[in-house]
Image 1 (cartoon, rainbow, N blue to C red):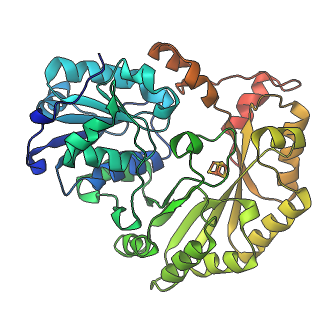
Image 2 (cartoon, rainbow, N blue to C red):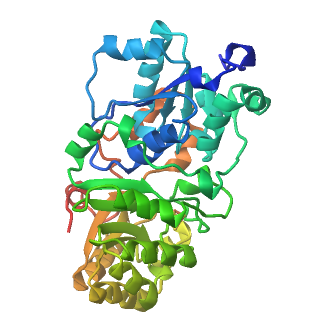
Length: 406
Ligand code: SF4
């Protein structure tokens, strides 16, 4: 049943409220932690100073049922970031929470705004905006105000954070020991949300529909990196690092001042770089940049709303390579309408430039809005390949392309 909050049940002293943030188990061990750090830990960090906060990441930590139930018993809220591949395990968690405690279950995350009504049938509070940091803070600090925007269990007031409100990953309460086992030398920090582009396959627009990019203050990025190990690799997790050019330049300038220089990588668009910005990135310690190239088929580029001129693309990739930064291209396999010819052409183009790349499977996020039962999310669990039929491409080749990193 969708729930309406009773502000009277929320303690007048927000410090007494306890929230447990839980990342559900995943079908496989994660290989990338950026969502865990940004969606789970940084969200918890945002209210860390105004409530009692715990973080549990079941994708990297094993816990006894008894231990986790005890934590739920102490919690007023259990907050679960949802991904399409964790929905069914999130439901199992919710069942355990309901059996063992009075905690209310809050869900938020990439897929939630795509089908909030469905999630509201199963969870107590559904945060249906990408600005969930602010929403959860409001739930803790101003429950009556929060309640005004909670309709049938769905909260959708989109209120962005101000730059000063960004918080650093709260390492003191994060499962750092386990995270460092997954990525022994890598530290992640989220630095942007939102994007002014509108690629059809990207979930960012469902989260932040406005054409705005919100960026973390550059000084915070510098301080985070400065206060962590000198020999670590830093993943500056941006939607498009160089989209706001002046901000990107400030970040580079501050990172250039660190002694010793730290090694970092990020992602951006190939049509948002030039010699000057690449020079500044290199000078500040950037060693690798990921570019979402996706496909070189013109009709497919139009259908995904992401087009590049091939000669410009080649020029830009070689410019990055010549600067001493490693360019890495992300390509999408399984786009509706893709053919083997497109796949081979795109791959050959990148290989001829001797540039790193990897194929990633197309995820049909659009289907999420049509899903009627949570069981249907099995489709998105990473236990199998989607196995799109690409004319001319055998299933063996499809799977081989996805498993090879070059
Ligand atoms: S440029 Fe990147 S972040 Fe922006 S909409 Fe396209 S894929 Fe998403």
